[in-house]
Structures are given as structure tokens and as C-alpha cells.
Image (cartoon, rainbow, N blue to C red; front, side, top):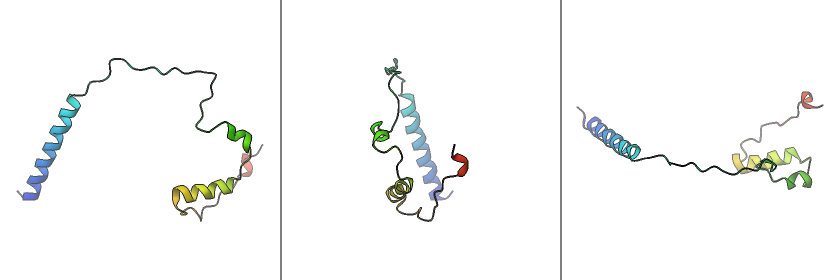
Length: 88
């Protein structure tokens, strides 16, 4: 057999051995912590004060900021358009 293949098989066997020993030593927790939730509190990732500050933000401006922050300007050719079917 080729030396590279033998070495790859050796490394794979070693990796599987380590993985089995790690999984074998893992024991799940006996008690699960239950988070106390309050149903009267709204769950949102957005700060509720933003609704009061600007209930109708500049969508284009937000998109441009999002583009710069997360996509480094790569979405400049994308057009954001509100569909007439989305209105009441």
C-alpha cells in the first residue's frame, strides 16, 4: 500500500478512538434546569423602545447599513421593493 494511504488510515483510526473515548465518558445531566418563564413578558430580540422611537423606519437606509455591516457592500445591485399585494 501507499505510505500516504497507510498514514491516513492510521490517523483515521486514532481519531475514531479518541471520539469513542470522548463519547463513552459523556454522561447526560441527571436534572435538567427549567427556566422560569413569565407569560406576561413579551419575548422579542428587539428592544420594545424602538417601536416608540421610530415606528416607520427608513427601510432603504436600514438595508444599506445591513449591506455594509454583513455583506461588505456586495448587495448594492439588489433592489428592495415593497409589493403592492402587501398593502391593506
